[in-house]
Image (cartoon, rainbow, N blue to C red; front, side):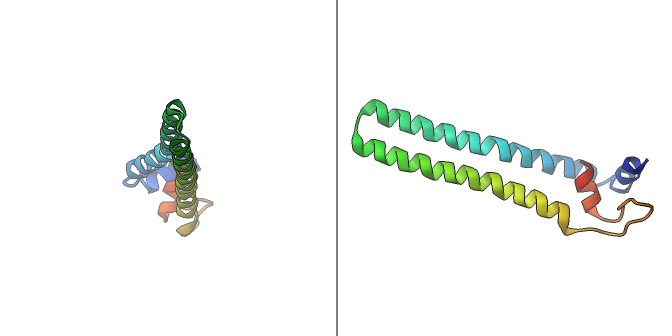
Length: 107
């Protein structure tokens, strides 16, 4: 019953919250994978060329991309946690139906 009360309370926000959470999951999973794959391809090309200078450059590029991938993952995770904590409204009958945080948690 509580879940239906929450979903009724955030009827207009539900689709928006669902899309935002879907985009967050896509960013959290997709961007780090793409960055690491691109770095591995660059490093593979440098190794095939057998040029020490090119290998060092590709290695530093791979490290920078891995750091960026971790930063993107944690930035999205931090935003997700903050969105869940930031706005808490009134609690009536054990259901927090007055804040958009209830919608955020429900989807």
